[in-house]
Image 1 (cartoon, rainbow, N blue to C red):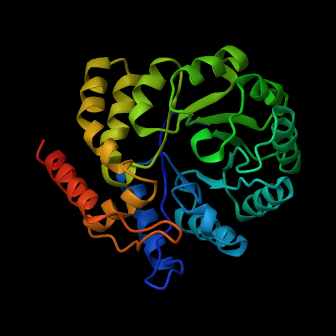
Image 2 (cartoon, rainbow, N blue to C red):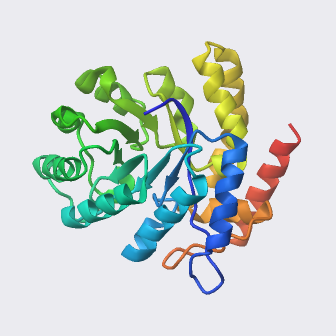
Length: 292
């Protein structure tokens, strides 16, 4: 799709747990002002697992409206039911998204031929919409093999892949299986630079909520061949990355936004607010980074 850093935006909540629409619009404006290359709406960080279908679609619709064509919007429309994923993808296409993020089906652990059929059905249901496949076995209990991705490369709209298995080897395996036609993005902030060194072209970022310009600067430095600057930024950002993933995403990043003055609410149950000791560590880490 493009190179660079796209933010996996949180879904702000009111005290009663409902979606805070004005806060969402303000957060969209903030990320555009910070220079993000795209917004990924209702991914893992956007609490897709606890939004109902109508909320899911409305968050995407309102995000598209708030962005107003200034940068791309990628809608998270994956599900562990093929018919549900097709429905959500069709709704997102009608809302005007620039692409969709499709997570590997979770819980039911389909075999590789089932995964291929699942994603092919979605691709055929929205043939004009660019699709990003999303592999995160730590959450789904199922991993999509590079050979399975290669089978889907005959679908013209399967164009990118979010790699969140926690290894750089996944990037190499995907490139060997699919060639350069598949644009690969890091799904782990801390692995962005290592993954780019073996062929990834950017990141779907959680940490961009608090260090967006620095992440973008790291990526731009690497792409222009300034490896020393990119490495220095990579190392400088590691404490923040560690603090933001000290427990289940998006618990820490919502706390980080609160520490920065954003009223985004806590995650919906069964996720819980960040414990006080982790919040203290996060606050100290963010303060230390501001002083560098």
